[in-house]
Length: 354
Ligand code: IPM
Ligand code: MG
Image (cartoon, rainbow, N blue to C red):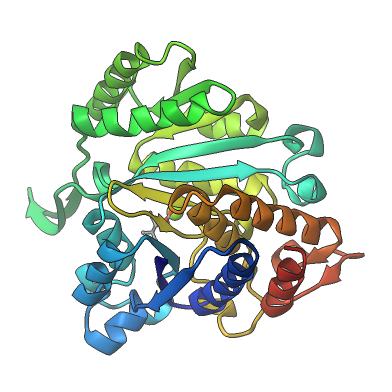
């Protein structure tokens, strides 16, 4: 038996995790995975119920789970909540509390969606890259000051810092990832300006000595942002810090046509968490039109990495490819001539192809 903690969160979180669980139940029947589910609150929903975005009980349950499936958190309803109680604190608290140091964000452009990309088809066809984002360090978790008076003016600050072991750990995982892919690693930093980036670059270069089969290059983050638009096919694995990884992964996600399709795995030493990279989309919550594919593909990553159920993961990925190839489209990727479907029908179409 494997226990999966499911955290729907806010907005469309419930719809998309319901959908992913239904798909998991379908592969479970076929491959006898013996999965069990336990539901917990986090985000604005938890704040409304318990006054905190991440109840202890949720974190404790995740620590005991074989894997965590996460929907999304946040929404304008909680815009005026104090910084330390905002819904986003739930996911940050889970990352820190579970030690989820590496976030893998694959961007694989499906042939049938090439036309949905904002980039020209010839640039996009065949793109297959992974961003490996450091997830529990950097400016996200440094000291900060919301407001202070200095020299007569109000200011705020956030501190970026990285230690050598933090960079080594994420770099090793990135090299391992590149080794079983096309053997190319791009490390992204801002070493022409930032001290943390110079330490990052030195450390990555040192770790590279142990991975001779992998070709390493370094890019400044501004250049990388541009290269993702002009020649995304050059990338195999990209490794970078927390903030740069946040920004570049949204940029890379739209290359595939919609952020709604993009999964992620946040890898920890004890357990790992899987979530789509999009947000809680409060504007469409409850309407049954959200694209569940990013969450379903996250569930496939869960099977692959946490439960070592490769065949079941592949069955889900193939079913999604087939659903798209058969012309079904949720609103975010719909255009004339295709069959428009909502969350529930998307789930059914995918399950029937497993
Ligand atoms: C992401 C999100 C989060 C982040 C937010 C919700 C805190 O944008 O997972 O990329 O910035 O890491
Ligand atoms: Mg983000």
